[in-house]
Length: 170
Length: 170
Image (cartoon, chains in turn cyan, green):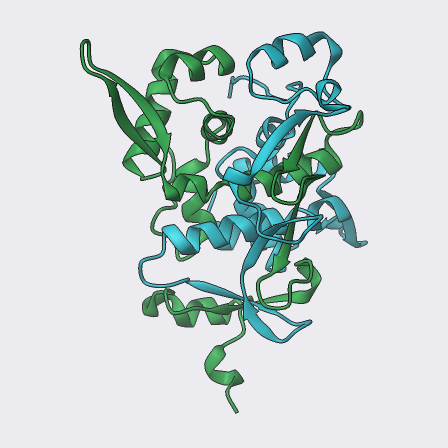
């Protein structure tokens, strides 16, 4: 499918959307978090075509979120395992689930998460890594970071969307 | 565009993906978080076609994440404002950005978030709402919740993906 690629944008939301931003990929990851590993498991639960599923698993493997691992010799058979990069996507799915539970679930959450560590039913909360308070949009501003390309810096600052760190120094 | 709809699935990740799961919608929301309100602002920064932008803004308005508000009488002009439901999506974008900064930004984060409340540069962290510890995939199990449809309960439990709350009671 022809589409715009966001991979080169100076925004990691755009890059992430480029990578996972199709309808099936987050659900393939969800199944992996539920424990699916084999092609047939993904296929049975999601009910998508083998062709589309192959594409999604291949993309997730190429991008490093899953690894294709041989689990049987004769005949050779493979399964898909989450890598560290893939497991690290779980908080994004959990944050998405929390939002959906709040706004798209009039009958209550269809699925509950249980945190084995503290032994409580729970949900995701997104907090500030520094002060641990919930991250609210109204209390956040954006600044250009070290990975922002120099050639786009001036035009980005001209949009007024970003504070200029250089101007904030005393 | 013809595609599967996930809106009726007993999973709020699927429902959320159904709603925001196209390449442009999360970026339209990102621009709204950066302060964009008028059609031309979204168009100029994102560089997408007016047709696609109209579709996305209309969908976000219909679904309750944005409100179309008249800001001028003659001629009548409208802008798009985030609603509470829309602003509440910010933590999902912030969690996505954190993952992208970690895995897709070899030159460092292109954009930094600054938490005005505690006056520190920060990033999103997804924690357990109960014990406030980071939510890690390995420490989470899933249970069927109140909003899971009764007619699918038995087959869902048969997959082995969910603990049965009824069986966990003493």
